[in-house]
Image 1 (cartoon, rainbow, N blue to C red):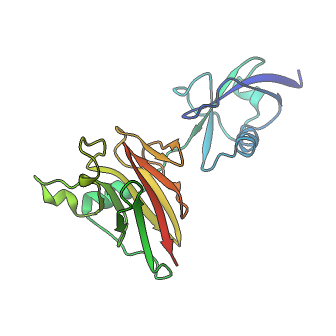
Image 2 (image 1 turned 30 degrees about the horizontal axis):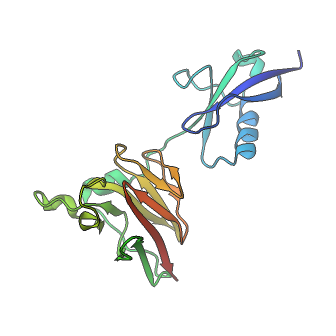
Length: 210
């Protein structure tokens, strides 16, 4: 059989049960590239057969050679790489932003309170009164923004690389949303000026002045 039908699930996304008709001789790497293009997926991905717990399929092999058959389910899983943010937080290491930015800040949307970001990783969260050592990289203290806290001490972090900004969920318990999309812990997502960040019940807008 030259072609067969597959069911596609993309781990960590609402995309599930999508039908694909592909060549049996298609290399795994080519199928991943096709999936990324079709569903606008950034980052690096691997393909697994049946479920997320199975080993990744070899990129250079053809689908037929790795046991993919008519009616099989394939799962596309993002490869999570260490961002270095947690290590920087642990060491209390911070860096200044690129000189091309005159001001980097966020605005709390209910009160319009502005928080200037002077370094990165810039932690968004709540100050730790009992252990001030935990506040070394805290750039946005949302302690006063809500009566019943839904924001973690270290909730999210904003970083910059070569003029591009990113946001990352660094605690994994309470959700972080970027423009309504829930973020997966430990992955840096591109952060554009004007984007809305939701931490618990607190809504922020990211701003830049170049």
